[in-house]
Length: 220
Figure 1 (cartoon, rainbow, N blue to C red):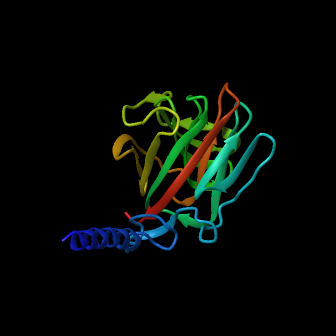
Figure 2 (cartoon, rainbow, N blue to C red):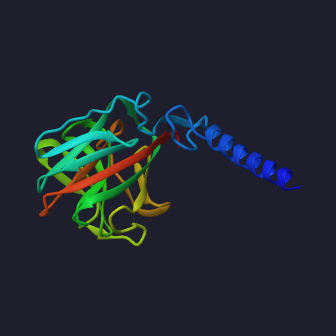
Figure 3 (spheres, rainbow, N blue to C red):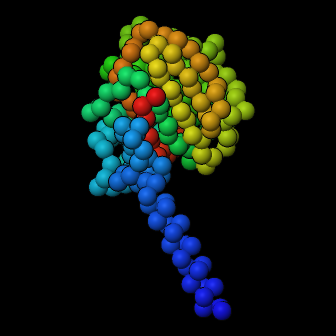
């Protein structure tokens, strides 16, 4: 009887493992195998896409332990890793992100509908529970869609807390979510399509390390 019970336990474990494998695509992202998925990346070496990795004394971007990690060593800077080979217009983007080290006021998030490195939309959160939504217009500067950095109970605070960010872009209408909770909606006609990027930033304090995982882009 013990042997039969043990075999049943092993069979259940194997079925669970096979289910997880079936729910992940070749990039290792769970649940990213549906017909509506147009892009996914789990940052598995040898399987990941062509993200731009840059670095200098102020900041470095690298893939570490199957995460895209942005490590900043200066204050008042922003660094991002762009996916230059694919353009998205209408989409639903999800990504898991966490602040690993640094001041809780440091920020991290998603750039989308990028025209180039100076023109894009930006959805950003901080380790102490604030968010910002804005548009960069090159030399013309920034346009904010919220008056200031705004508090949201949807954001998990503290170092190591994983927050899932979601951007739903359909025509001129854009909805932004944290951990499946809507935090802001707006309508804008400036950019209708573009590339995406993952970013991190510092303010007064000079150090921050942010990790991203499980990027999925779906058709609406």
